[in-house]
Amino acid sequence: MPSCLIIGECMVELSPLDANTLNKRFAGDTFNTAVYLKRNLPDCVVTYVTAVGADALSQQMLDVMQLEGLDTRYVAKSQTHTVGMYLVTTDASGERSFAYWRNNSAARNVMALVTLPETCFDVVYVSGITVAILDVPQREQLLRALASYRERGATIVFDPNYRPLLWSSIQEARDWTTRFYAACDIAFPGGDDHAALYLHKDEGAIVGFLQSMNIGEIVLKRGADNVEIYRNNEHVSVAVTPVQTVVDTTSAGDAFIGGYLAAKLAGFTSADAAAMGAEVAGVVIGAKGAIVPADYYQSRLANRTHRNALGEVLPVE
Image 1 (cartoon, rainbow, N blue to C red):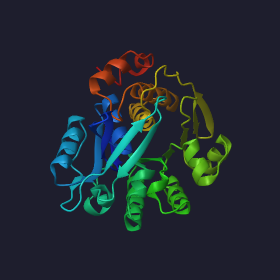
Image 2: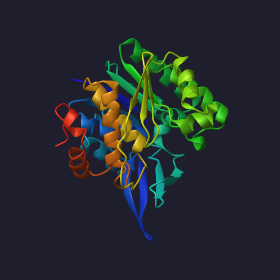
Image 3: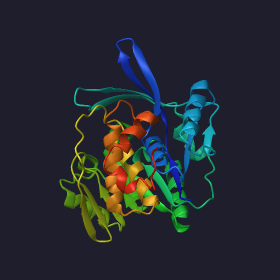
Image 4: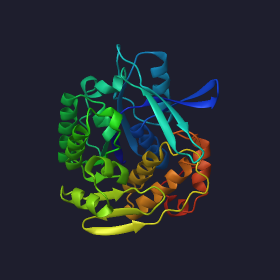
């Protein structure tokens, strides 16, 4: 049975229903990926590591995690902190903007609150947001944990997911992002992240930089454009079917990674994994919210063409 350990932060997502009403959901980059991984590969044990509070809202979040089938045994409960929150607004084209309230988030102390499982996992996934919300001692602790899992055979996966407001300076962000890149086996760089962090102006600069750190698999996300995969000195370009109606791009990248990891853990090639990731992201951006309703998701994914290629191993009914 495949297994994946994901470490990060889940937050309360607020979005306007009208001028006086906000809708509440739960979301966060690593949580979104965990959910879409589990939905596409139900047999996978997806262990989500985070910290929440001891209040009613935190319990609701934990209930949703369990409803999605995630293993929550390593979700810590803080008596002094609660869960972070953000407000997302979208424009007519589906692009989003955010306002955050996370200074009192329990997840900022996750490495201090949780004793990580000693189990060997097939995949361990963290993001740049996971790293950014931690203090320096916890970042070092996380790096040591990744090295330990890697020694035991886990594939370490990293998405830089650069958020400037979470870092004290661009230099701090660059230094830590580079260290976590060096600790991973599969990387999901984005062009905008690299332009901001490293002043990389094109794909060649990004790939050359990451290959210099001996990262075995580089999956370059480029929105609606082709996905470029560099693996073992081979380059594969995977076409992406354009989405006709874009409603909300909040978790497009997270959904892509969830679909990608599901296919990889099911034994598919990197090219098939990229195609699956693109299909998952295409469904998700067609509805509001980072986590779209399961019934909507299942019905829409079942109607998309790549479903036939991967459906036998990645059931969605």
